[in-house]
Image (cartoon, rainbow, N blue to C red; front, side):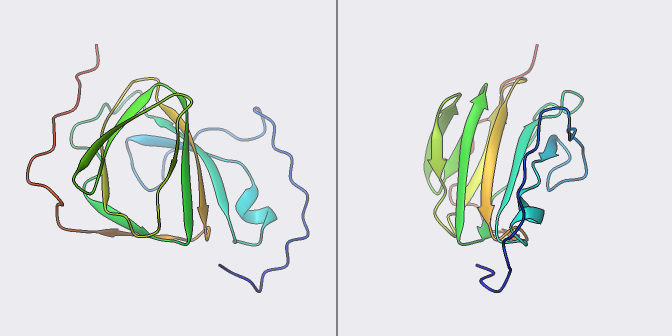
Length: 144
């Protein structure tokens, strides 16, 4: 963690203060910055992520891992299916997942209304593509 950063900012972001935008890690998701990276001097990022209604799932995120010290996903709406190493996991609204540092995973399917809160440390974590943990990943569910 960036232990040298001075955390001295108060942050209060209301729903209308920031909007969902593209240009994040994945084109098929939209991201809403919640001001935490700025408030913590880059020690933590906290953003809302939701399905981009114009880009339904086709192949998902692909196999990857994150270089980070801490990551949780809190599903607030809908659902998503992940492969965590060789295990398929359904994450539904209300579920909380601690993705241990370096875990190989793949988000391969999600609902049209999927939205989750993601908290990661440090804010500038890296995403590394990795070889598949299993040969076959189930196909995404077609949107209506």
